[in-house]
Amino acid sequence: MEKTLKSLSKQLSYILRHHPGSIGLATDQAGWVKVESLLKNLKEHGWEVNRQMLDTVVATNEKKRFAYSEDGTQIRASQGHSIEVNLELAEQTPPPVLYHGTAERNVLSIREKGLLPGTRQHVHLTDNTDTAKQVGQRHGKPVVLHIDAALMNADGYVFFCSANGVWLTDAVPAKYVKEV
Ligand code: HQG
Image 1 (cartoon, rainbow, N blue to C red):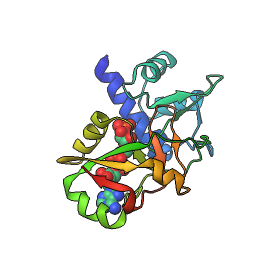
Image 2 (tube, helix red, strand yellow):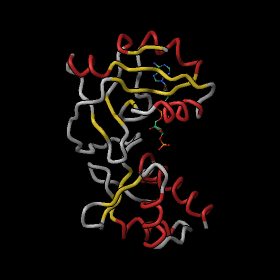
Image 3 (cartoon, rainbow, N blue to C red):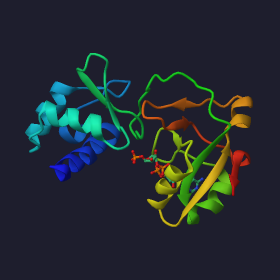
């Protein structure tokens, strides 16, 4: 069962962040899809998923990657999108220092160009060095970069915090990135 839920979670990330069209869905501007349509289209594509399984993934996913709308009729990924969405998050004052985990091989380029969102809508930052290290590990030998979020914010750069606590910003110019 756990394995099923894990693969369902991966499938949902793929669909809700990157390729809703892969099962014939489109998200609305804020990234939401109707739960009913999601279950129907998953079924048409060979995934027998019921609402209870979806509830379990939403509730137990270790990074709380998905959220229901207030009335429970819609679902979206809380962050990580490559499709263009406006999550309608309120700007927030970030903690003075945020962290970004990357692979050692990216550091030279980051030193030159700063942190860029790449294929995603935002650069993803965390307030937790352990999380940053884990994220970096996904890419190779991990390096945890320190971001002077207080200075960035004072200089007018805007930050958002996703429903699952990931800090988002458009890009981080090189001068705010420190290797420690
Ligand atoms: C790197 C996970 C060279 C950047 C995590 C990263 C996160 C540069 C890679 C979320 C660069 C992009 C996102 C530059 C950035 N030169 N490399 N100028 N600027 N990079 O996967 O932040 O588990 O798109 O350092 O927890 O690793 O999926 O971003 O290594 O929140 O829920 O380009 O994904 O969440 O990689 O991860 P990604 P990320 P989930």
